[in-house]
Image 1 (cartoon, rainbow, N blue to C red):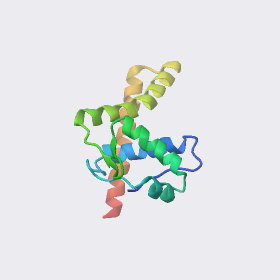
Image 2 (image 1 turned 45 degrees about the horizontal axis):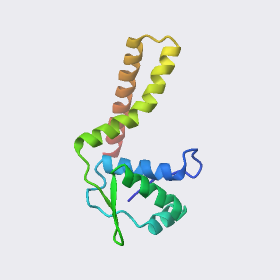
Image 3 (image 1 turned 90 degrees about the vertical axis):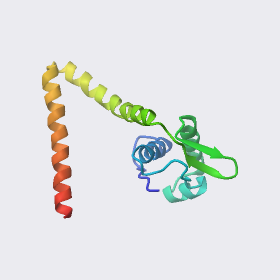
Amino acid sequence: MLIHISQTSSTPMYEQVIGEIQRLIAMGHMEPGEMLPSIRELSKQLMTSGITIRRAYQELEQTGFIYTRKGKGSYVAKLSDERLAQWKMEQVRGPLSESVLQAKKLHLKEEQFHDLIRHMWQEVDEEKQEGEDNES
């Protein structure tokens, strides 16, 4: 399991771990029933305390992303497509809400904002396509 965290981020380490595991699950990189690394293993891998990983696992369990079997370990839970779609929308809603507020403060017209989003979406697609072309 490849988890990327930043020691210098202002986001607490346990929140970074939660976000990364949720992302891996939502993107299908971790399958339902798949065992997560033990708290000790993951804390060693990420060079952080076991308390940090334990807290992340507890919150992941409370939100239904994982389940734990006493003495056996923690596993990826089976989430409905609806639940995964809801989680993805929640991840985008916060930052996008800030952007909408900023656009309104600057008196940007709604159509200008929509055009900006469409343009940015196309740029990302083009960059992705260029990256794929360069790999060939």
